Length: 129
Image (cartoon, rainbow, N blue to C red; front, side, top):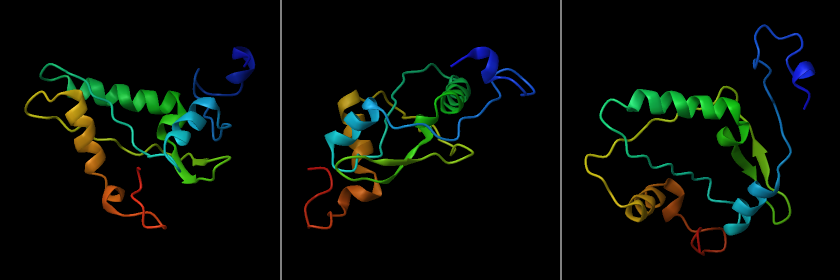
């Protein structure tokens, strides 16, 4: 992209918004791991007290700068998943934990807390495996 033409006609630098982008290799590899993808991203950070507001602002900034981080899988086939890019980005709330959990147990807990985790797929098989 040409930085000079990218911001032409915008009120401030960086104000140009991307509405769509082609699905690339990274998204395909995410979706290949599980049929249809999991639709779950877990970001675990160990912060000092009072760091939550700064982390929330950083997450919002990342979502604005990288549209794929706010995308949802709309439909999935074996050859090409379709991503939807909602505007504005959905609010992601931080979920502070009272004690420091090991990353593996935190990941397992988050995967098990999703509503789709207990529902079998159309063929009666579990969604993840």
